[in-house]
Image (cartoon, rainbow, N blue to C red; front, side):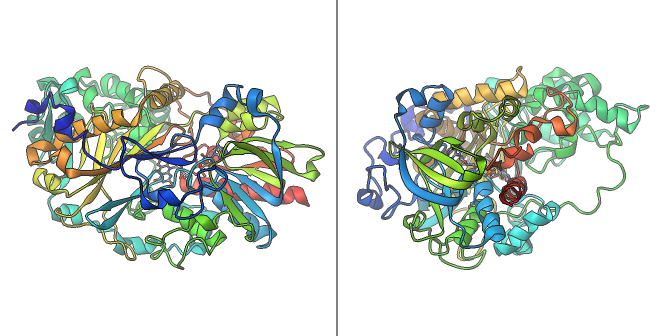
Length: 639
Ligand SMILES: Cc1cc2nc3c(=O)[nH]c(=O)nc-3n(C[C@H](O)[C@H](O)[C@H](O)COP(=O)(O)OP(=O)(O)OC[C@H]3O[C@@H](n4cnc5c(N)ncnc54)[C@H](O)[C@@H]3O)c2cc1C
């Protein structure tokens, strides 16, 4: 049976009527969609909204729409729309006072709490507030139960990337958390997929390329041989092959600096068609190769950035090999992309929580954190010096008198507007939110904070009964340039502590699917705004149908049955995903001190600003570095 004969699959063929769990959280309360059974622990929850994290509350096990789950952003959007305070009424003081209140329980907020206690003392009282039902920010854990075993996935922040390049502060934090990155060389089975003869395939979809076809072995045994099987025009095959195989300096005669300056102002799409002079028919093949790293397609990403970073799947973007763009050697071997816990950097968040609140997560090592079950009932315990309060959207942070008297923080939790006081406050939420929280900030600072637009991303995980279809097709990852999800991959093969990777194709698997909603033709920031609007309008059923349809079209020829083989789906929706990094195609070249993230992150009285946005770079080490800077600023202000 060919993929095409499934073109008109019904919802039933796709398994839309199958009873997979689809549980979401809404306003801090779990809901079952479609009359499905609720987890046992749900019935013991206090749903008054004041204490939803008691009893067996355990958000990592929820499936359905996660990430920015429903209920997490309603108050923030009301604030943005100037609608919040018109109906909020007067906040109720809780009477609680802290040395530090942190807004945001992502890696930056958790690290800020850790650094603060290091600098001020372990007895310092710290409250961390977050609007989500779980801690970690983007570093979130997804759990699945398949065939009697627990399978893990990463809701967002995926891996510790290039730890050798981390700052001394970030390296030291890893050590303090017990993370020895060299252990991943054993934990990550780098040979698994190649030992099974699996590699990268390309799925050509009929809407873009005229027919549905999966071609395995990207670029092998040679580019012409691979492309001969692809539904592409003669010109497209010839030119894709050319750019991958010929060794030409397309800007010969110019200095390295002149080449780099030109490529910084040329999109990769224009580089291919105007400088390498490929037929425009090649563009659909490359269009979404930049989506994972930049959240936009090749028409909005500078060619220079494509040269420097490649795509995110281990394949360099072609055309630069002979152009002499890099000076000398790169200074040592690049580290492999293997520093991955089975739940991604959620393990770092969990290690930080364990450090702050040892009673909330048992264990002592980077191995036992993988399977340790967090006790959410211990996060917000009045007996602890550190408290983490979830399902709490901060709506205002202000000095109510002289700065030295500290800060009042107002937040919504369980429908109640309440306040706490802190001697200081660190905003580890994200830059775009801060002007709404702190209208007293100077206008230039508010404008600077509002400049960057975070990248919307969807990280979907699908729990499969087995991964035999991938083995039959000879692929462990699929680039799908025109599809709803332009990238689909089997999980990273990592076994750590008690967690064993399902290395046999007949075992269950957590599959990863990426989507970055965007609108080609606009600037990067406008594309992100359009993508975010799309996310708000897309419900779980739409995602589910697209997931099932795409997997069917790619995998049915290898015996996959979406109605039979899909056990659970978690769509991690990140409307405010990667921190905005400047794009040389669209952004001015400000002198460093005038860059919006530098202007925006200045301390204001007893309020300091952390989060990866404050470093204009979407990486874990940046979130950590910014936390350290913010703590330093706040502690100095106390002296
Ligand atoms: C899908 C995805 C994948 C990524 N993969 C990687 C990777 O592999 N490696 C890497 O190094 N980096 C990766 N990143 C970058 C990642 O953002 C950083 O690594 C890091 O996790 C950011 O941490 P943070 O604390 O700065 O921000 P966040 O994780 O965004 O945490 C901020 C928290 O503050 C909360 N908040 C916001 N406003 C309020 C409010 N008003 N009240 C209460 N709480 C509020 C937010 O909801 C959030 O929970 C990825 C990012 C995304 C989105």
